[in-house]
Image (tube, rainbow, N blue to C red; front, side, top):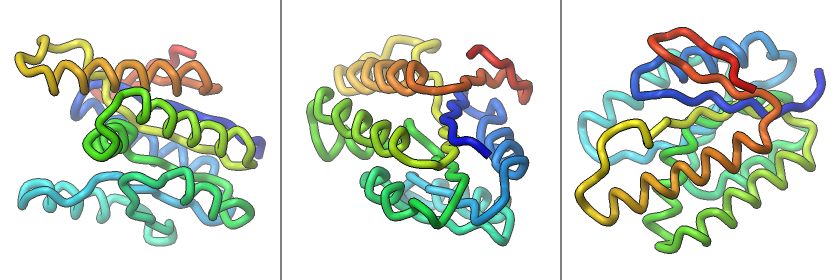
Length: 174
């Protein structure tokens, strides 16, 4: 298997995570690592996390890391062939809340992309397409939307394949 970067984007509940897991299963040769970037926020989020955990194959390793994904990837070199990062949007949110400046988040995403490029990993990233909805009324919401769009473009540019999920149907766009 050759290394590659695959980005799966789409709206909420469009089937992104399910499709990403199906792709990862097809590539599975050694240990598949699922990097969960969601951090616990409230009871409803905890239920979503439990549902995601139950949907993963039992032989996959899960790493819960909401910020230092580049470090996780460096540590996986030689130990895994496939890494599924779910999701880039939450990672962006976590980094934005910590780093405060959009350019600092972009630098961290670029660092992750460098690690991926320097590895033999096949990395599948799930992200949300956030720019197709209404314009947020709060500045923080607009800043996050703009940052997420920039991050998605950056990763899509580096990706070997990009899929847009609509109603559970993957459409290959790159």
